[in-house]
Image (cartoon, rainbow, N blue to C red; front, side):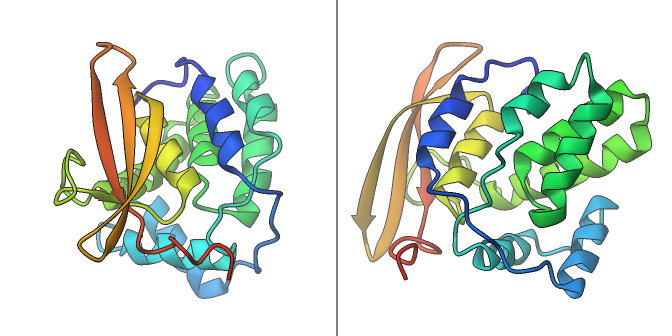
Length: 204
């Protein structure tokens, strides 16, 4: 998982993927309960179902976090402020990857390791759910995504910089083939995402 010191260039690409901010339905109490289990590191949580339920609340697009860049920029010098911004976002979108990243880093900076570990557990659960034990290197080994912004957020976590994107329909399934470059090695490759969950539904 990449460090918070990594370049924010991918964030600019992510913003381009987002439509106007959307209003999600209120977070149901049973949904909150499962999120709490995930934060506690409960390995029995079905993260794939949890991600799908969260996406359906916001019409297949995560809520746009207007304060993201500000929060990420405050982690080292103003961790209390960064944490407050992250928590404000998490009230509406508990699975926001970037808000959880900010909360994890800010809490670590504030020397609150137990609380930081909760957000790390949630992020790890989301990442493992997206990858599903596959390498993403082919159609057959594609990762699964519940939205385009999630694709970019996961690539950010993996330290992979998007270079291009192609939408492919093959064998009755829809995929995003992302050309990426490893920011540490400079190696270029492609990551496949299965996008059956949301492809064609965004305009419904």
